[in-house]
Image 1 (tube, rainbow, N blue to C red):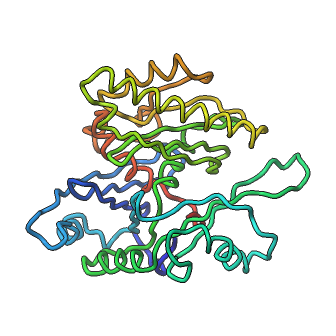
Image 2: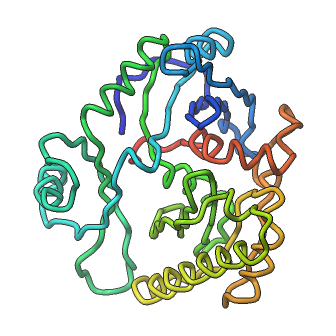
Length: 317
């Protein structure tokens, strides 16, 4: 969602994301044809005594945020992502038509919603048929509050995005030409599976298993979580194969998960029909300016912020 008219800024994007413990800020420059360069990563712990607990003013001053193009992400509970059939209307009428279709699908009134859309391309070699789109809806009040939060901190917020698109940005760097790629990540709120092809997002599924559950000490409880993740992956990948038969998914990649990675990777590899690999961001990003980011735990902590900062198209959610 583009929010404000952008002025001339330093090349690249600064992504500012909110976590339970504080605020993460990542600046990535992908101006060259080489690997995108992670210029800086910073974390600002939430101050319980401050208003709202968010140290945005400190971040703005120390990182000179006003010199950057800045964006942020909504959290899982702050928006709805819905798959809808694309209406057969001119492009300038699309959002109005989508708004009408969503009016009975949202858990709040459509007049209170900010709406944006993402096209899902179909196979160019098959006859034209109904195509799908993703629609993202968030409450107007929430969007306005987020804008005001950044305005008060004197951070020039240009874009509000969603985690699915941040993960898509990373997945696009990992794709094999002519093949789809499945990417699975976990954080405190749960798991996120995306499938991309040709840098486009084709599938998004939430999995109700958090990172802490994958890391719990009890072996039996951990196995239950592994089973739940595996079943959801099997169902989602089977559905994807039926709906997008023209796309072959080359592999499933696991985002950096620290100590939780090996056990889950081995379990999934034994129970899925596609290869399962662990992602090392060093393979697709230049981390030379932030050597501490080579640690898997740090990559996990900053994963979504890194993905958000990889934004480079003008038209996304």
